[in-house]
Length: 503
Image 1 (cartoon, rainbow, N blue to C red):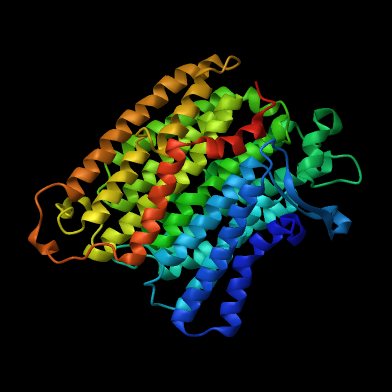
Image 2 (tube, rainbow, N blue to C red):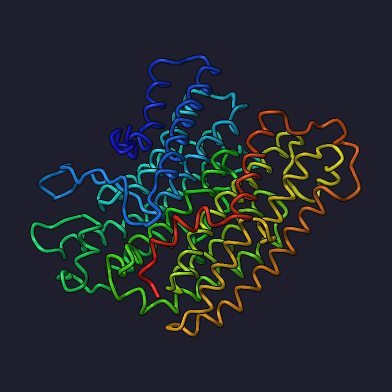
């Protein structure tokens, strides 16, 4: 049977939401809730793998559904499709969605509601990566807000250790602030298209600048949309919501937040600004401001790395490291070469796997020791050798050790950015950004040494190591990190054709 005949993107997109409905209406017992959530997320992941296998490596939009009438009076359409960029993010989202179910297995407070929100969150994120209609894209962009707020404010770290309500509210305010600008930009772009106006990303991108009659300058439309993506990425100085959200979120939500929620911002930049290989939806503008934005990328890299050195909370340390590593993504995007854009996309996937594993490992350490403060921990390698080894692998991957996907991604970003002919200042910025790797090696190795390899402390004698379920999902992370590190072509063959028209 042809996989396209079952409308796979629609099925993958709404399977988690369907699981949430089944749990809400039919299931009450906690164990059955967990199993149901695992079943629906596993089917979504398996289907995304099937799409990856069936994907034509020659590139282009594939598995397209629509455009079909949705809100006819506005010209809005139900329009889905993925290229290598979207497909890589769909696979990452469904994998982390499945893992998050198992990471949450020991949640025992309001279990039904927790898994309902977790599954709805997955559908919201998947919708962003599959949508080819701007209004549909915006709808899914907003859908993830409510589940994230609920998951952090109800199941997050309670006082006095955390400020879950504050962190959840701060996340919502930042996101809504950016979303207001993005909606204004989308509407300006919509009214800039010829009548009957359209929200179709494909039509706007293929029409080019001559097709548009801008109602405001294209540069203004660019920045209206860019602000929302910069907040979500996040770009310094719009990053301050991230450490609080990570610190107070439950472990599985931190995995999703770092793994794919941040990628929504980077994906939006590539799709709407550099998308479809012809300058995106606001052609010619991004190149004019590339040097300035690349400078912000370098500041994010260096600031995030420096701030990480000062952290004593494991979660906050990894949160600031995300600011640094996502700066590499921003640098790769605005170097505007085929190789740098490919590297930025690979870095998005790499960061999702590596940081997702790091947050999962922090969750395990906290579950076993009830402690996240680095100065209080020490010598845990003796009590939890499996956790120590996997945590060390994740840390070494984060600092870009060869044979891990972290090395392949960062090397591709640096090489692609440095070889940019049009933007020679980017080359100087690449040299500065490399310092972030040096600082990153310092804070990762220092953290591992303090937590696991100092003198063991008696109060942690008898704490357990990872159980069989925990070993299963952390080993799955390790296998993928090493597989794509040793043989990155598995991903590059899918991603590279997206940017084949770039120099």
